[in-house]
Length: 233
Image (cartoon, rainbow, N blue to C red; front, side, top):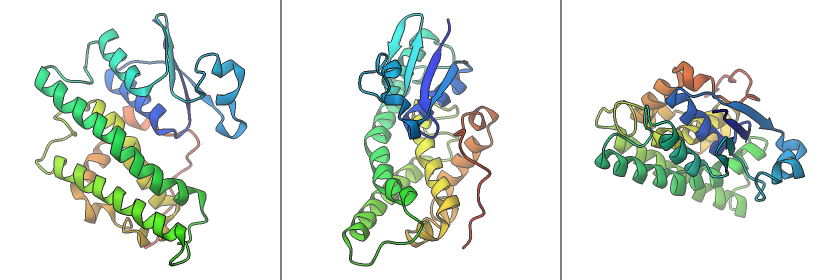
C-alpha cells in the first residue's frame, strides 16, 4: 500500500504522523507544502481537505485529514508495533495521555510559542497586554512540563512504558519546539524560565534526549531547521 503524507515543515500535528510512521517502521511519500506560499489553501490541496489544514494521509483506502484519526488508522492497518498498546489497560493509559497532550500541551505551546517565534526575541513591555498574555501562557507551559515530569519520574523510558507510543508522538513535537525556541530565542526563553530546561525538568530532558538521539526520530526533524544555534546564558 502506498502512503502519501501532506504536511508543513515543523507543523506539530503533521510531525505526530511522521513520528508514528517512524515508530512503526513504515515509510510514506512525504509532500511538504509551503505555508509561506499558502499551498495548503490552494485548490489542489483543498480538494483533499476542504479545511485547508495538515496533516493529510492518502492511501489505497482513501483520505484521512486528522492526526489522531491517522494514528488510530495506522494501528489497525499495520498492527505490528502498536502505537496504542498491547492490552486494554495499556490502550486506556496511552489514549488518555494522548488526548491530554492534544488538548492541554498543544494549547499551552500555541499560546507561548506563537508570540515567541513571531517576535524579535525581546521581552514585551512590562505591564502591556502582550506581557500579561505571555506570562499566562508561560505558566500554562510550565504546568504541562511539570505534568510530564511527574509521569516520567518513575524511571520509565517513554511516556507510557518501555516503547514509544502515540503519546510520545503527540508530546515530543511540543517539547522539541520548546527546545527550538530556547535555541533561537534564548534570552527571551530564559526570562520565561526555560533557560535551563534540564535543571527544571530532568526526567523530561532525559526523555527528550533519548528521542532526539533516535535515528528514526532524527529523520522526522523539520526540513527548514538549520543547525541549532548556541544557547547563550
